[in-house]
Image (cartoon, rainbow, N blue to C red; front, side):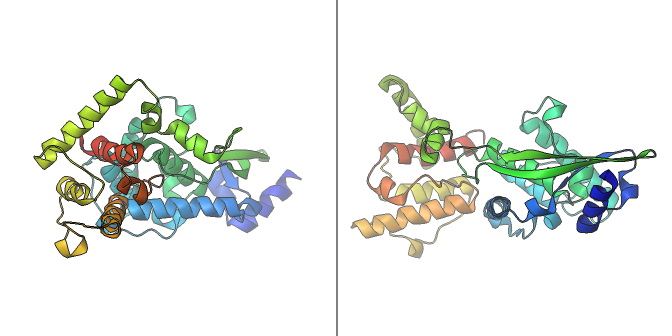
Length: 313
């Protein structure tokens, strides 16, 4: 029976039993590969990668095929953690790719704070072998660490077969593996997002604590803009700040420098949020209208995202 199970997976997943000799491997069941929840998670991760790396003109189409050589992971680490490793940008040979992955994953594991090796569900060999399960586990961990405000599909689980091949035969077991947790634990998803949002939690504290943080963020803004008494509702200062911090010029024809009505202000703020998304700061919980309406929480979320990214520069 166990041999029949393995032969089934061998046929579906094109796995060579010789490559398993003396190892334990996990394979996603073919039925789970067609799960709509898994497909949505894969799409969300691809969109996140492409949004983060858009300024570098890197486009990912497949998690299985586009991350194995270390190029994408290297650039993600650089963008998200401002880490520049001494490795070649494009590794052409298998040996060069493996070396690059080792360096990148070693640094990533440190940044992810995974001291316990049992928590690490990926390694160089798995990623280089285009292992989808390991690749998704790694990317989800990166989102949770560097882009917590990004809403990934929740409660995504897959059926996984664990296969062990030895000289005495083949042993396989099937179990469920969690890729993302259930965010809806007795409340709606927006409440879960609010619970994890540092700004939402901050605004619940005493007024003097809130003011202290506001002063710190505004001091950071003033240092970069060389002005005081900033107002963000019309989007102008926000656009100029983004250009200053990210190092690019926004053509004046793209926005209204002196907005006189609600429509122009909304256009400016929407452009600002689009630019933030382009540089990897996806603030899906912030509505442009909230900024225009001078909503304190929305404005603080945007400024805090910029502050957190650039405070060490």
